[in-house]
Image 1 (cartoon, one colour):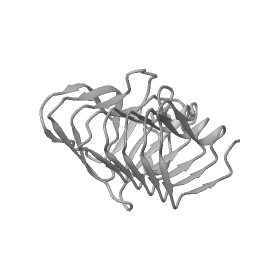
Image 2: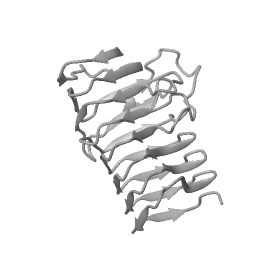
Image 3: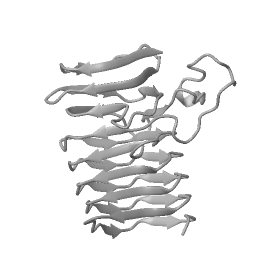
Length: 212
């Protein structure tokens, strides 16, 4: 793996020679754009209440349904994420909450065609904080606290699949998004929770087999 950390304060493209990036904490600075090719894998560790990947600038995602970008646990040895990155064979296995969050604070982003897995130890695996990026076509699965947290956001959340998230699929805090054509299954508590001044709209969603 290639270790990625610190603060990225210039614009550029992440290039990896068929290796995952290993991340504990990295921040993309305001006004900077980082281009990420489709198929890129981020393997993450550590519970950080501020987030493991904090995007104050722009993530220019080259992902597609056929070539998603993965955000997963360093313990995830699945073939699609490069196998045994931490080199311990099968001594460790991934679990809900192995890492905390990808945090988006700039609304010019579109978060699309990504897989978020085994995160959420703080604030959900994907945390949109105080901005309104589109969240489209992602797979958000096996996270704890929630899959997606929106704080003070009116993002359009469209065509995502939320599966087997511990507690909530989506957590809304003072947020009124448009939730459209999402599938939410297997949340242990409930599929969507509102708190504060949250008034989402719903259209065409499939919500089954959740708690409560």
